[in-house]
Amino acid sequence: MRKFILFASSVVLLLAASAAFGQGGDVAIGFGTLMAPSAASASPQYSTQTLGGGLYPTFSVDFLIRHRMGVEGELSWRGSQNLYQGYEPFRPIFYNINGIWAPKFGSRLGAELMAGIGAASIRFYTGTYQCSFVTCTDYTSVNHFMGDVGAGLKYYVHGHIFVRPEVRLYLIHNNFEFSSGRAVRAGASIGYSF
Image (cartoon, rainbow, N blue to C red; front, side):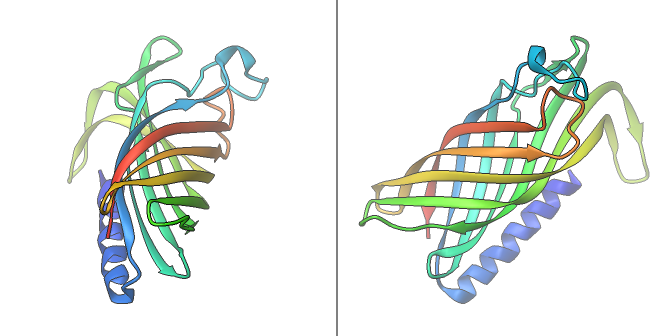
């Protein structure tokens, strides 16, 4: 929850910065799936558990600062829990900050190319609550530094409303809990440009 509050605070800060520069940006929500190497293809340093599969809701926001270049942030998580090694529920959460280049091809079509850094947080649900002074949780998190690259194609269907098919490659450092250190998320978003 703290990470989400930090992410939301960053979005508000970037919205304020965007308004100051007056260059515009986008807000979008979408859905996709994650594709990763299968458990059977795991090399010796990786676990025989795939990270792939499932429905991933995604929230993203970007701000163009100068010459169609700017900053983009994204939060994506698995909508339902999966089972790790057949017995322990888990849920991956990906969040990242990217540099973005967003060229336009006429009034209704545009592209987005981005690259950046972030983290993959894997929540393993234990079934028992652990409480601190502030909160109680029923999971433990394993966090990994991550790099990502991605692209999207925006088509404006009406005014400032767009649909965007998109793809992301996540390069997850030391992701030994799963069959590989890489995963691809593909999906589509609907959004609004301001």
